[in-house]
Amino acid sequence: MGLKVSNVNKSYSNIPIIRNLSMDVQQGSIFGFLGPNGAGKTTTMRMILDITRPDNGTITWNGRSVRAVPRRYWGYLPEERGLYPKMTVEDQLLFLARMYGLPRKQIQTELDEWLERFQITSYRKKVVSTLSKGNQQKIQFIATILHNPDILIMDEPFSGLDPVNMLMLKDAFLEMHRRHKTIIFSTHQMHQVEELCENIVIMNKGQIVIQGNVKDIKRQSGRQLVRLTVADDTQTDWLDAMPGISDVHRRQDYIELRIQTHVNPDDILQAALNKGGHVTRFELVEPSLNDIFVAQVSDIAMPDTPVPVS
Ligand SMILES: Nc1ncnc2c1ncn2[C@@H]1O[C@H](COP(=O)(O)OP(=O)(O)OP(=O)(O)O)[C@@H](O)[C@H]1O
Image (cartoon, rainbow, N blue to C red; front, side, top):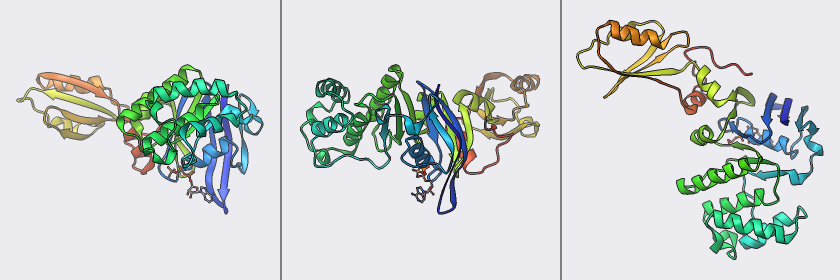
């Protein structure tokens, strides 16, 4: 159950923008949608929301075409923010939520809670254009969720937020997750994805280059690093010649090296001990999502086979 995108293509003026895109998003999950500028994230989101129609392929929510899913099920935070600058915060939010036919009293209670949570209660009678960019973004987030939608689609919700507001928004994501909402969001902030998402898609030039579970993707990336610290008098020249090892860097406190997937890290530790060295640290470090993203989208060859699209 959840969102299913199957074999979707989209062209503008005969230029393919989205090519044979298929992905599944489990209901109730937080799903990260990544890709460089122009990869096709916004276009895909707009097709999921049925704002733009695919040329072919299908998109369903719990088995039903998204075209048939009532608007109140969706909450959309668009990349180009869509608030009315001359309206007050309260009037704006009540107006937007009431378009879904919700009773004013119910909205008001929920609204009070969110304004409090985001520490912007004192701005409720203020005109939106007088608020800072970060506070406007928080208002936009509230506008996205106030009608209690099941699926939240958010285009770069973290952009332009300071670290404190980012934390607030992250907490809000987790609150929506506790309420069993499905959250799909695009971002260029990899650390947010690592902290929030179980599953991701990375797109490049309209195609998916990686998709799956974040932990599996990291494990299978073939970019495992080893950090090794040995006593000062220990020989380490042999590391540079060892097969399956690359990028040996001697840092201040440790030596960092990259091992290919077929190399057993135990063999490196054993080799270090065999050289009569005194090993004080031996650590396997997974690549960050940022490393994987950069390697994939900048067409840098990975040391081993890239993660296949599953
Ligand atoms: N209505 C349109 N007409 C023509 N081309 C379009 C249209 N909408 C999007 N595109 C093109 O489709 C490509 C993908 O754009 P899209 O906005 O989906 O990328 P994105 O991944 O969201 O990028 P960003 O991270 O910069 O927001 C771009 O080359 C863009 O110029």
